[in-house]
Length: 219
Image 1: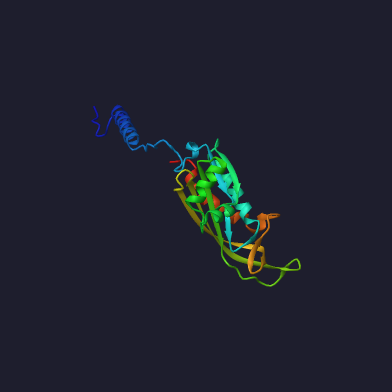
Image 2: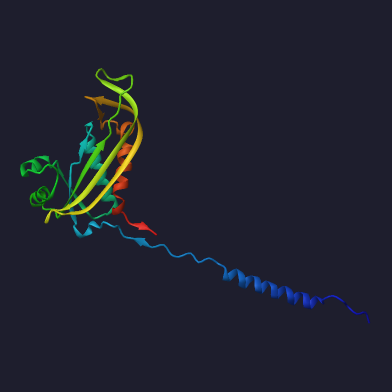
């Protein structure tokens, strides 16, 4: 009888099966467990108010219809972020503020708007546009035509109309290159007739940033 110095086929098969079991066990043990995503509610939940007021934004260093455009975009973002909320646009608050003797929007103006419009809270925003230097060329017969980098700073606050206190505040800065921008009296002139060419993207980016606390997020 010839003596075999190697392993028998049966032993080889058993060894292979054992190796497969070990590899399977190691593979299962190292499998990464992905945690489930959780929907985090917005930091500023307006559901408790049901109805909020929105004052026409004030604009600094520009002329035209930028205030109306920015206020409208902000209202759209609120309604999209928190369905079911009612937004009441109350127009400019400058006359109310001046009548109450406030240099800027404050507690007295917030309380007055609350009584006049029956809203528990009111949003107020201010948009500041940087100065720009016009280049050669004219838009029409009177307005210079420029292409320049324009910076804008948007600040928005939510006031309680009962106490006049500040409930929330947010701000953002954006710098973008804008072409076809008119200058009137040394200040940028924005027309809402064709906003996409002038300032729509800049204002949209700013509003999207300052309203981030109003949106729910997945984490």
